[in-house]
Amino acid sequence: MGLTRAESEDRGHGVWAEVDLGAIRHNIGILRNIARGAEVMGVVKGYAYGHGNPASAQAMLEAGATRLGVARVAEALHLRDAGISAPIHVFTEPPPRSADTMIDHDLTATIYTEAFARELSEAALAARRRVPVHVKIDTGMHRVGLLADDAVGAIKAIKTMEGIVIEGAWSHLAVADLVDHPFTRKQLDLFVDVVGRIERVGVKLRYRHLANSAATLSVPETHFDMVRCGIAAYGLWPGPVLVGSADLRPAMALRARINQDKVLPAGERLSYGLDYELPKTARVVTVPAGYADGYDRRLSGRADVLIDGRRHRVSGTVCMDQFLVDTGDHEVKVGAVATLIGADGSETVSAEELAGHIGTINYEVTTRIPSRVPRIYLNEGA
Image (cartoon, rainbow, N blue to C red; front, side, top):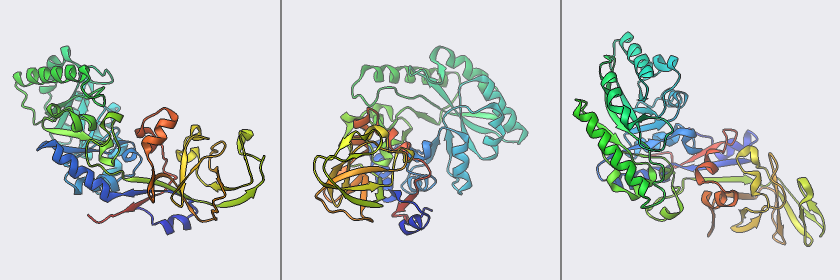
């Protein structure tokens, strides 16, 4: 599905992301065990959190995930075009004119407005079909969803629409990454209450789902019929307090092949702004990766890269396509591999480490790696 490293370099790529599909399969297996009988939905929105689709999605299904989750119809179509036939959930309502597309491609819609429910029902009836939908309940995060007080009335109206059948109800947790936060219990209790009221008006729910990766790992009461695992499926942690809470393996490494080395005298300054001054005569190497490859400019002077298993600090400003590294007296030649994320020998630079340098979360670090960086898939065989 992906390029080999040789093919990548033949096409002129000096930077690439290695994605270990075996690690993704392993992580789904671990999450299935933790879920204790609840189904696992593999969340692959955001280009599988930067890890690449459809390869990541297929690896999840091979490991026992039963469904996939995306944010947008276009993401689902990418998977369908690749031949993936498993149920795919679209987490938000698309523009109304997308209803026909969702029906044509067997996509499971999230519903939280009667207007879109009606559009979808009419499209299903025109196609002589009846399609499943999952109703989103707003239990306090307030992005999208039916407010608890409005849910039963809306459900009664949606229930009368002949083209759709309410298969599930779900909500999303705001602070599950903060273990024992009281708001998670508040959301859980409200979800249970609303689901109970929905079922009392005659809607039998096949799926109730609330748990994201963090809740899957730490709040078993939220597992219900299905858990939705995104970040943990890629071996990344939903929050600092959950680090090490399960046997998860990071699936991604970001590497680049050094394309120039030179020896410069003490006092020379490097890169834009000339912010970094060499304290002594040193070897300086150029790494062909930059902020256009998702390597944030704020990592300038803060992040380490690994070369020959050693840590070296990014020296000077990260440019759009390149950055420089002062390797001191460590002799590094053109063609050596620099690891920006991942392991080299006994050293590792994690997505969490980079996130800490720039005040963000690991989700953003991997998701921002754009498609111009080729994905090289390891362990493609199930």
